[in-house]
Length: 125
Image (cartoon, rainbow, N blue to C red):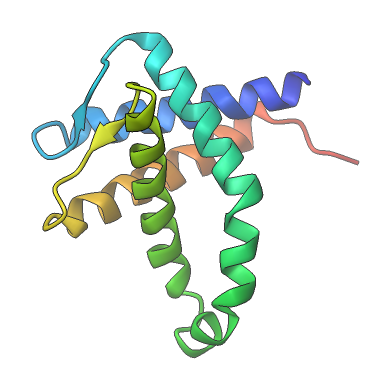
């Protein structure tokens, strides 16, 4: 259970940094600290439930692009988290013509998650 909470906090930190760095292009509905925790929880659930399905479905694309298709999947999941969060007034919005900022936001969350996971999450043996 403690590992799950750490993952939610890591996701929340990544989302906070992405929104902070891309502020004019990504607009939060609710900028309170707990909104990022809710989004971190949604992000974790989306990554645990939907991401594996998308990875299996897009396997030929991933092989063809040598794994770079994963960046597109991460971008789509980032946009999905924002949409799901908007439905409960905790999300963020990205204009539909600004796919680049969704891509950059997903990239920021991935990098922050990778770095913080290396330091904070214990190895499972």
